Length: 210
Image (cartoon, rainbow, N blue to C red):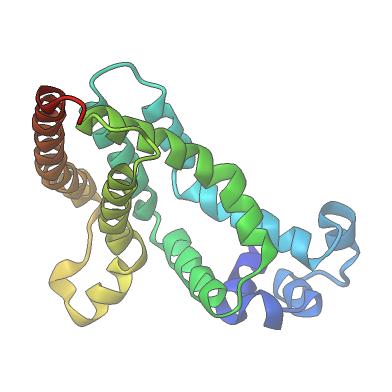
C-alpha cells in the first residue's frame, strides 16, 4: 500500500495526500476523501492494517482457548511473535512507531484503545490467575509489562539488532522456539511470585487482627 510506505518513510505529519497519490499512481486525492474522509482517516486505516499484520486475530484466538492459563499465555506469546514473520510489514510498522514516538497522533491512541486494551485486559487476567493476584494489582501489571517487553524486543528491535549482529537475525523457523523461551523464562518468575503470595496469605491469617 502506497500510503503505508509514505507514512513509514516520513511520518504522518510530513506526509501529504499528493505524495501518497503520486506513489500510488493516482491522479488526485478524491479517492482518499471518498473512502477515508481525510489524511487522518487514511492513516488510521494504515495503522489498522499494521495491527492486523501483527497477528492480533491469532492472539484473540489463543485467548479464547480453554486450558491452563500458562498454556494460553504461551499461545498468546507465540501468536504475537508470528506477526514478525512478514518482515516487510514488521519493518514498516517499526518505522511508523518511531515517528509516533517523536510526533504522536490521535490515530494511534484510538487504534490501540480499540484493539490493544481488550487483549491487555485478558492477559492481565491470565497472569493474575497464575500468580494468585487480582488483574489490577501492581505486581500483576509489572509482570505483564515484563513479558510484553521481551516480546517487543524481538518485534520492534530485532531488525535493528540483526544489522549489527547478524547472528541475532530471526528466521521463520525460530519464532516458536523464541516464544517458548520467553514463556518458560517468564513462568519461572510467575511461579516464584505465586509461591510467595501463597506463603504470605496464611501468615497474615495466623497473626489475626491486631
